Length: 66
Image 1 (tube, rainbow, N blue to C red):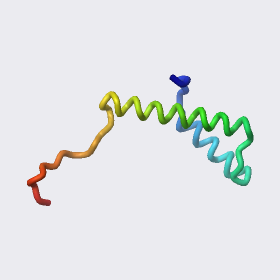
Image 2: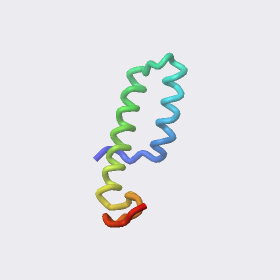
Image 3: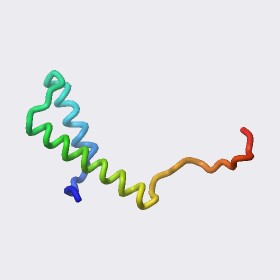
């Protein structure tokens, strides 16, 4: 399991802003940090799906017309 990082989205947003200011290029350290944050985020999303904590929209019966 990857590290527990609070505010993953906040850190990703900061890296995205830095990436834009640096002519769309990450340094090696930034790229490693980005890869770790993305892996952590994907793992968290996978965990939420596994726990059934993701909304899948409203239920529609097959025979019901809109």
